[in-house]
Image 1 (cartoon, rainbow, N blue to C red):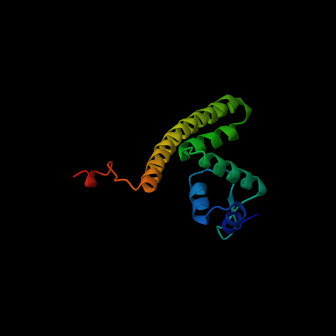
Image 2 (cartoon, rainbow, N blue to C red; image 1 turned 45 degrees about the vertical axis):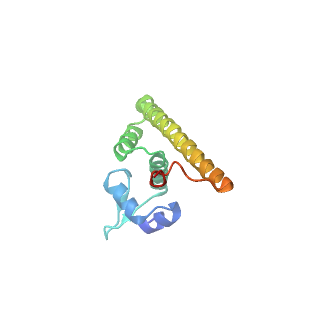
Image 3 (cartoon, rainbow, N blue to C red; image 1 turned 90 degrees about the horizontal axis):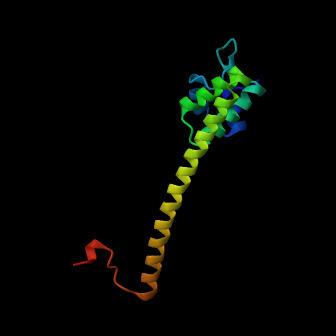
Length: 131
C-alpha cells in the first residue's frame, strides 16, 4: 500500500492533485487506514495512470469520472467508453489544427522581423511608427 506522498513521487503528480482527484471520486477503491490516511494499492496506481492520461488529453473531470464509472460497470459499457475516447480524440484534432494555425501566424511574423533586421527597413506594420 502507498500513501499519497508515495504515489505523488512514483507517478509525478502533486499530493494536492491526488487528494483532489480522490475527493472527486476518480479513484474508486482507495481506502483509508486507522489514522484516516489514504492508502493506494497497485490497482489504484493503474487508476492514477488512467486519470493522468485522460487529463493530459484535455478531458474534463466530469468526463473522466464518467469514464471511470463506465469502466467499473464492465464490458456492457465498452461502446460508450469507446465513444468518449473518440470524442476526445476529435477535440484534440481540432485543437491541433488551431495550434498549427497559431504557429503559422507566428512563423510569418518571425520571418517578417528577420527580413526587417536583414534589410534594416522601417517597420510599417507597427501602428506607432506609421506617423
